[in-house]
Length: 534
Ligand SMILES: [Zn+2]
Image (cartoon, rainbow, N blue to C red):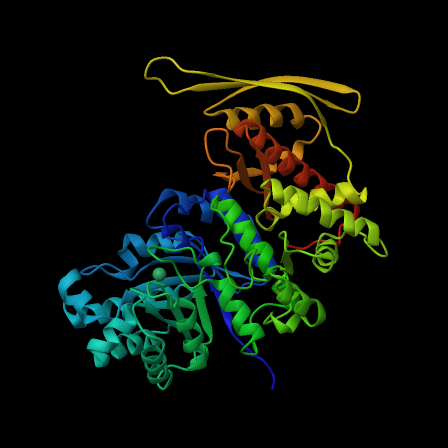
């Protein structure tokens, strides 16, 4: 059966920025828009030019860029009550964005019309008709977002349908049914979509679902099954309250499970990368449990599963991770044997053929370190470095000569920490000092400062999490601590570990591993540009 096409409408740059802690500058928006365009997204909603100067600036900048695949879309509302479309400020701002497509939202729930806007039901229909007809006259592709459609349909189906029919008759190219409050269940939603599909041609029908019941993706897929041919959502599901439908999951499911064509196969292989990229620009930690694209999506722990996936990956994997640019991971713990190590070596791209002795040595070393409190299933970055060191596939990027950290506190003022550090790279010695709000922060600053001139790519990486735990079975003030660091750059996230009785020493170990990991990855990627994707 040939795949049916579904258009992907991304609203990360508009609805996504309604999410808590999600903010993009106009420049960042343009970077994301270009990335989505390159991947073949069909529509990119860039913002609401009527609502803020940043979005106006984004659309100004976007005029200089030629989108190859996507239709850039400006978002706004229907005209205000009691005005005409041609004289409405919002509609003028939409036109000024000079995009090929515009999306306007209008009310489909009678409660919003009479109780919130305080206008008559007929006036609302007229606002929809007038706004769409005017924008069509100005040669725009018009997408009508039927706001609160499903809540409205449940309470007053006749009126909800009237708003949709009014939009269609006025010339709307797409009618998008919105589950604005995210409270609709999939069977009711599908039923409503089927009813609308009887009056709106399905190729014009779209879905916009919010995730307040954890059902945004399920509702989106149900709507497609019921006839919708356009899906709206955001990368990583960013959006207000519990977010929007996560397009990485929606696309994965539509394309790999439901035989609907959304993106070219080579773009599908960039899905994991896209997810990391957008969380990087948003400066939000990537969620490891995200379906398809998360770091844990294809991670296996425990001997039986590991043996099984080694024989037949489909035993515990619903798809081959490479299809979405992800990869299989094995979480190695002290239960690990040689087969897990061989597996891990393949994952890291470390040559291990016929090296029985090396493999034994690695297992011995892991067991010894885990006995001291290291925990490698939580620190893949440190594990990869350890294996590279033992197999001889590692070059020290720098050597520490010495460091010292001081912590000063005066009265009620916060503590100030200073770190001084001497390192060498080849024959060159570098001496630096830096401040921080804590000892680890000061060390991190000093080390980066010292290394920056040798390895400028360090600027791309950030620490995203820092956890200190007591090593089990070593209670008291002389207890051992383990420090776990999560770091990321635009490509991936990695975890490293350090263990010591001294929290600064443990932090230092984890910090050095993190930086060494970043530098060794960059070196590998440079040598083998094809080798890693995601
Ligand atoms: Zn929304």
